[in-house]
Image (cartoon, rainbow, N blue to C red; front, side):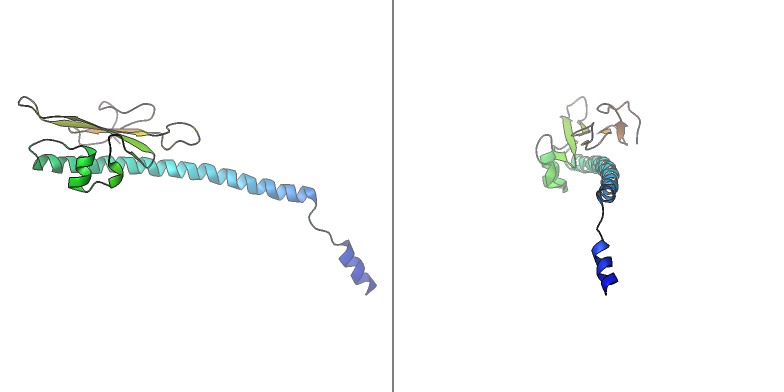
Length: 158
């Protein structure tokens, strides 16, 4: 019985070094996980922006075919074509990307046109919402991308 009491008395918990090592390992795992999480969010935002530009291109073609070659604003596309309501306004911010739409009215000498840019709300740093800039217009059948500045028609297609 006496040896049993001595064993219970000699048992100790973690010492400070062991506890610090465990905390350091947990911190390292959280740090690596948060970097990967941020990269995953940025990639998701970029994919969503490219898919949205593709959908806008489709909606604009449908709208123009019903409206004598005139293209729609974001608000008109929300009402007529079923574009997500997040796109109301002049420069909507959706999934970390700022969408900008420029319209040219049709005239007797030239048809109507549109240009759409999708630029990351925060393009650099640890809180970046995306790193790629996207562009499409009424004369293109693809989406253009640039890694450093707002994309134009001359940039490579994705």
